[in-house]
Image 1 (tube, rainbow, N blue to C red):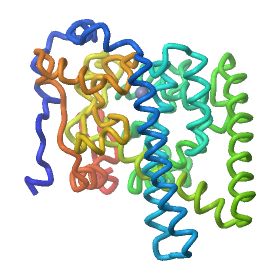
Image 2: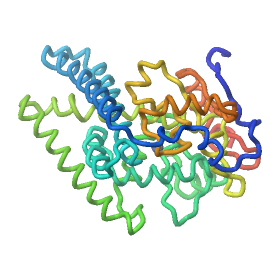
Image 3: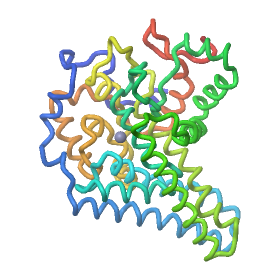
Image 4: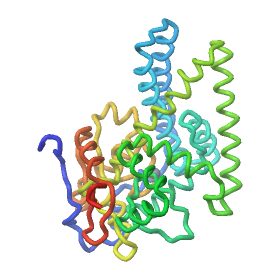
Length: 361
Ligand SMILES: [Zn+2]
């Protein structure tokens, strides 16, 4: 059990820097050049991302060309792992961090999101809301807040939902107990309805539907043209995109949800608590971390979204060596730890300031 729960550092309840309420201090310990895009690194990371994806699609082709059907699920999972790398690239583009030019960021962001079926602008807006309100229980109702970082319902909210909208309560329950389903539903329910966005955002949200639709048709048409097979469209494109939900849910869940981290009421929340104390580094082996563009090194990303993914490791080192290092909750990527959190983190008890299981509500 202890091995499962092995952690490098958990400091949620006793922050060393109790006096900090914002990010101005920790931002100063990271070198200014790490906040800036760097074209050479951007090209290198883009190459890693596309080469990795192409490699996984190569495996899909191998299984397809030889009709090794027993390898198909492995191929879908691997290709979904490749899609994750492209998604992380798009994530940096959505933060305008990857390239200096915003146009380039938006251009490549749209392109790479086609493999995971995310409308780029819609996700950009919902994700920015996540950064603005990380682990805050209730945001300003005027802000959109479609956080895919697993905001829990409070026990009061869950009880009301169960009574008034039992189907929604059931969906919430399934999504929390089987996070890939939750991640998939989150994409559909919160990104594909323009009415869910502020008026000023809707034009761009709709534009990204058209771009996604056109690119998806192009990809599907291309696959059909090359293979003359409808199954190939699923094999090379649709199923990897669905398997991607596994990684999407794993990362988003682990980054901010565990029995060791809190959600804060608006009275209690500040950016130091949200971005540092409630952001968890689930550290993968370096080779794998780089294939996923360092998404596991998450605290520096929450310190500032301007830090591009290719600078996260350096920024992390600087932050870790500073007085703020001890306040960073983190551990090695551990599937058992993740499963343990999924078993426990269902509903937020505001009075006790901790998670409850469904059967405890
Ligand atoms: Zn982000």
